[in-house]
Length: 236
Image (cartoon, rainbow, N blue to C red):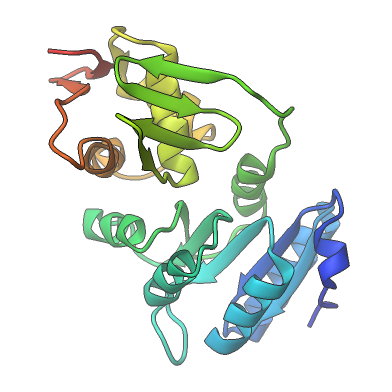
Protein backbone atom coordinates (compact mmCIF):
# COMPACT_ATOMS: atom_id res chain seq x y z
CA UNK A 1 0.00 0.00 0.00
CA UNK A 2 1.05 3.63 -0.34
CA UNK A 3 2.88 5.45 2.39
CA UNK A 4 0.43 6.98 4.82
CA UNK A 5 1.05 10.72 5.20
CA UNK A 6 1.56 12.21 8.62
CA UNK A 7 -0.68 14.84 10.13
CA UNK A 8 1.96 17.44 9.33
CA UNK A 9 1.83 16.38 5.67
CA UNK A 10 -1.94 16.82 5.56
CA UNK A 11 -1.54 20.49 6.47
CA UNK A 12 0.73 21.29 3.51
CA UNK A 13 -0.52 22.71 0.24
CA UNK A 14 -0.58 19.32 -1.47
CA UNK A 15 -4.06 17.85 -0.91
CA UNK A 16 -4.33 14.43 0.71
CA UNK A 17 -6.91 11.97 -0.61
CA UNK A 18 -8.06 9.17 1.69
CA UNK A 19 -9.18 6.02 -0.15
CA UNK A 20 -11.34 3.68 1.94
CA UNK A 21 -11.46 0.50 -0.12
CA UNK A 22 -11.37 -3.20 0.80
CA UNK A 23 -10.27 -4.25 -2.69
CA UNK A 24 -6.49 -3.99 -2.31
CA UNK A 25 -5.77 -4.09 -6.05
CA UNK A 26 -8.24 -1.29 -6.80
CA UNK A 27 -7.03 0.76 -3.83
CA UNK A 28 -3.41 0.55 -5.01
CA UNK A 29 -4.43 1.45 -8.56
CA UNK A 30 -6.34 4.53 -7.41
CA UNK A 31 -3.55 5.55 -5.04
CA UNK A 32 -0.89 5.37 -7.77
CA UNK A 33 -3.06 7.35 -10.17
CA UNK A 34 -3.63 10.02 -7.52
CA UNK A 35 0.07 10.22 -6.67
CA UNK A 36 1.01 10.59 -10.34
CA UNK A 37 -1.54 13.40 -10.55
CA UNK A 38 0.27 15.19 -7.72
CA UNK A 39 -1.80 14.29 -4.65
CA UNK A 40 -0.79 12.70 -1.37
CA UNK A 41 -2.71 9.52 -0.61
CA UNK A 42 -3.63 7.27 2.26
CA UNK A 43 -5.38 3.91 2.02
CA UNK A 44 -7.75 2.49 4.63
CA UNK A 45 -8.71 -1.17 4.07
CA UNK A 46 -11.57 -1.20 6.57
CA UNK A 47 -14.03 0.94 8.48
CA UNK A 48 -12.01 1.30 11.69
CA UNK A 49 -8.90 2.38 9.81
CA UNK A 50 -10.95 4.74 7.67
CA UNK A 51 -12.43 6.49 10.69
CA UNK A 52 -9.05 6.78 12.36
CA UNK A 53 -7.29 8.21 9.32
CA UNK A 54 -10.14 10.60 8.53
CA UNK A 55 -9.80 11.95 12.07
CA UNK A 56 -6.00 12.09 12.16
CA UNK A 57 -5.22 13.22 8.61
CA UNK A 58 -8.18 15.52 7.94
CA UNK A 59 -7.90 14.73 4.22
CA UNK A 60 -8.96 17.16 1.55
CA UNK A 61 -11.12 14.45 -0.08
CA UNK A 62 -12.43 11.02 0.93
CA UNK A 63 -13.10 8.32 -1.67
CA UNK A 64 -15.26 5.59 -0.19
CA UNK A 65 -16.57 2.33 -1.64
CA UNK A 66 -20.27 1.82 -1.05
CA UNK A 67 -19.68 -1.90 -0.47
CA UNK A 68 -17.30 -2.52 2.43
CA UNK A 69 -16.66 -5.83 4.16
CA UNK A 70 -18.07 -5.05 7.59
CA UNK A 71 -20.27 -2.01 7.02
CA UNK A 72 -22.09 -0.19 4.27
CA UNK A 73 -20.17 2.71 2.81
CA UNK A 74 -23.36 4.74 3.14
CA UNK A 75 -23.37 4.10 6.88
CA UNK A 76 -19.72 5.09 7.14
CA UNK A 77 -20.31 8.29 5.17
CA UNK A 78 -23.17 9.18 7.50
CA UNK A 79 -20.99 8.40 10.52
CA UNK A 80 -18.19 10.62 9.21
CA UNK A 81 -20.63 13.50 8.79
CA UNK A 82 -21.99 12.99 12.30
CA UNK A 83 -18.42 13.27 13.61
CA UNK A 84 -18.05 16.66 11.93
CA UNK A 85 -16.12 15.66 8.80
CA UNK A 86 -16.55 18.43 6.24
CA UNK A 87 -14.26 17.04 3.53
CA UNK A 88 -16.00 16.15 0.25
CA UNK A 89 -16.94 12.46 0.08
CA UNK A 90 -17.12 10.57 -3.23
CA UNK A 91 -18.83 7.17 -3.18
CA UNK A 92 -17.79 4.37 -5.54
CA UNK A 93 -20.97 2.71 -6.80
CA UNK A 94 -21.96 0.05 -9.31
CA UNK A 95 -25.46 1.38 -10.06
CA UNK A 96 -26.76 4.76 -11.21
CA UNK A 97 -30.43 4.58 -10.33
CA UNK A 98 -32.39 7.39 -8.69
CA UNK A 99 -32.66 5.51 -5.37
CA UNK A 100 -28.86 5.15 -5.35
CA UNK A 101 -28.42 8.89 -5.77
CA UNK A 102 -30.97 9.56 -3.04
CA UNK A 103 -29.15 7.19 -0.69
CA UNK A 104 -25.88 8.92 -1.56
CA UNK A 105 -27.27 12.33 -0.62
CA UNK A 106 -28.97 11.08 2.53
CA UNK A 107 -25.65 9.66 3.72
CA UNK A 108 -23.98 13.04 3.30
CA UNK A 109 -21.83 12.17 0.29
CA UNK A 110 -21.12 14.90 -2.25
CA UNK A 111 -20.90 12.81 -5.39
CA UNK A 112 -20.41 9.32 -6.76
CA UNK A 113 -18.24 7.55 -9.31
CA UNK A 114 -19.54 4.58 -11.22
CA UNK A 115 -17.52 1.40 -11.52
CA UNK A 116 -15.72 0.01 -13.44
CA UNK A 117 -12.84 2.27 -12.48
CA UNK A 118 -11.51 4.53 -15.26
CA UNK A 119 -8.42 6.57 -14.47
CA UNK A 120 -9.08 9.64 -16.61
CA UNK A 121 -12.71 10.03 -15.55
CA UNK A 122 -11.86 9.49 -11.89
CA UNK A 123 -9.06 12.08 -11.87
CA UNK A 124 -11.31 14.55 -13.67
CA UNK A 125 -13.85 14.24 -10.85
CA UNK A 126 -11.14 14.51 -8.18
CA UNK A 127 -9.75 17.68 -9.75
CA UNK A 128 -13.23 19.16 -9.77
CA UNK A 129 -13.44 18.82 -5.99
CA UNK A 130 -9.85 19.76 -5.24
CA UNK A 131 -9.50 22.75 -7.52
CA UNK A 132 -7.90 25.62 -5.64
CA UNK A 133 -9.68 28.92 -5.46
CA UNK A 134 -8.59 32.21 -3.98
CA UNK A 135 -10.10 32.91 -0.55
CA UNK A 136 -13.33 34.80 -0.91
CA UNK A 137 -15.14 37.04 1.54
CA UNK A 138 -18.02 37.50 -0.84
CA UNK A 139 -21.59 36.69 0.08
CA UNK A 140 -24.59 36.17 -2.15
CA UNK A 141 -28.02 37.21 -0.95
CA UNK A 142 -31.52 36.61 -2.23
CA UNK A 143 -34.29 37.76 0.06
CA UNK A 144 -33.70 36.14 3.46
CA UNK A 145 -31.29 33.56 2.01
CA UNK A 146 -27.57 34.22 2.42
CA UNK A 147 -24.69 32.21 0.97
CA UNK A 148 -21.16 32.69 2.32
CA UNK A 149 -18.64 31.76 -0.38
CA UNK A 150 -15.74 31.43 2.08
CA UNK A 151 -17.36 29.01 4.53
CA UNK A 152 -19.60 27.34 1.90
CA UNK A 153 -22.50 27.71 4.29
CA UNK A 154 -25.93 29.14 3.77
CA UNK A 155 -28.25 30.77 6.26
CA UNK A 156 -31.87 31.74 6.20
CA UNK A 157 -33.42 33.92 8.88
CA UNK A 158 -30.20 33.40 10.91
CA UNK A 159 -30.62 29.60 10.67
CA UNK A 160 -27.35 28.01 9.54
CA UNK A 161 -27.62 25.48 6.70
CA UNK A 162 -24.86 22.92 6.14
CA UNK A 163 -24.40 22.05 2.48
CA UNK A 164 -22.49 19.34 0.67
CA UNK A 165 -20.13 20.67 -1.99
CA UNK A 166 -22.52 19.79 -4.80
CA UNK A 167 -25.45 21.46 -3.00
CA UNK A 168 -23.28 24.54 -2.46
CA UNK A 169 -22.32 24.71 -6.14
CA UNK A 170 -25.94 24.30 -7.21
CA UNK A 171 -27.23 26.99 -4.86
CA UNK A 172 -24.35 29.31 -5.80
CA UNK A 173 -25.16 28.99 -9.51
CA UNK A 174 -28.83 29.72 -8.87
CA UNK A 175 -28.02 32.72 -6.66
CA UNK A 176 -25.60 34.10 -9.24
CA UNK A 177 -28.50 34.18 -11.73
CA UNK A 178 -31.55 35.27 -9.71
CA UNK A 179 -34.89 35.31 -11.52
CA UNK A 180 -33.22 33.83 -14.61
CA UNK A 181 -34.61 30.54 -15.88
CA UNK A 182 -31.70 28.08 -16.09
CA UNK A 183 -31.98 25.04 -18.31
CA UNK A 184 -30.95 21.57 -17.16
CA UNK A 185 -28.09 21.68 -19.67
CA UNK A 186 -26.78 24.95 -18.20
CA UNK A 187 -26.96 23.53 -14.68
CA UNK A 188 -25.16 20.31 -15.61
CA UNK A 189 -22.40 22.17 -17.41
CA UNK A 190 -21.82 24.80 -14.72
CA UNK A 191 -22.46 22.81 -11.54
CA UNK A 192 -21.15 19.37 -12.43
CA UNK A 193 -18.37 20.81 -14.55
CA UNK A 194 -17.69 17.66 -16.56
CA UNK A 195 -19.32 15.54 -19.23
CA UNK A 196 -22.19 14.08 -17.26
CA UNK A 197 -23.38 10.61 -18.17
CA UNK A 198 -26.45 9.30 -16.39
CA UNK A 199 -30.18 9.67 -16.02
CA UNK A 200 -31.49 13.14 -16.78
CA UNK A 201 -33.24 13.51 -13.41
CA UNK A 202 -30.04 13.78 -11.38
CA UNK A 203 -30.73 17.53 -11.06
CA UNK A 204 -34.20 16.87 -9.67
CA UNK A 205 -32.69 14.67 -6.95
CA UNK A 206 -30.24 17.37 -5.85
CA UNK A 207 -32.85 20.15 -6.05
CA UNK A 208 -35.16 18.09 -3.86
CA UNK A 209 -32.58 17.78 -1.09
CA UNK A 210 -31.46 21.38 -1.41
CA UNK A 211 -35.08 22.50 -1.00
CA UNK A 212 -35.46 20.35 2.11
CA UNK A 213 -32.54 22.18 3.70
CA UNK A 214 -33.44 25.68 2.54
CA UNK A 215 -37.12 25.28 3.51
CA UNK A 216 -36.52 23.26 6.68
CA UNK A 217 -38.65 25.48 8.91
CA UNK A 218 -41.52 26.04 6.53
CA UNK A 219 -40.08 29.05 4.77
CA UNK A 220 -41.57 29.90 1.40
CA UNK A 221 -40.14 28.21 -1.68
CA UNK A 222 -37.41 30.03 -3.59
CA UNK A 223 -36.22 27.38 -6.06
CA UNK A 224 -39.03 27.15 -8.61
CA UNK A 225 -39.46 24.45 -11.25
CA UNK A 226 -40.07 25.58 -14.81
CA UNK A 227 -41.59 22.48 -16.35
CA UNK A 228 -39.85 21.18 -19.42
CA UNK A 229 -37.05 23.73 -19.09
CA UNK A 230 -35.23 23.83 -15.74
CA UNK A 231 -35.21 25.93 -12.58
CA UNK A 232 -35.26 29.54 -11.44
CA UNK A 233 -34.53 31.27 -8.13
CA UNK A 234 -37.40 33.64 -7.49
CA UNK A 235 -40.18 34.36 -5.05
CA UNK A 236 -43.67 33.36 -6.13
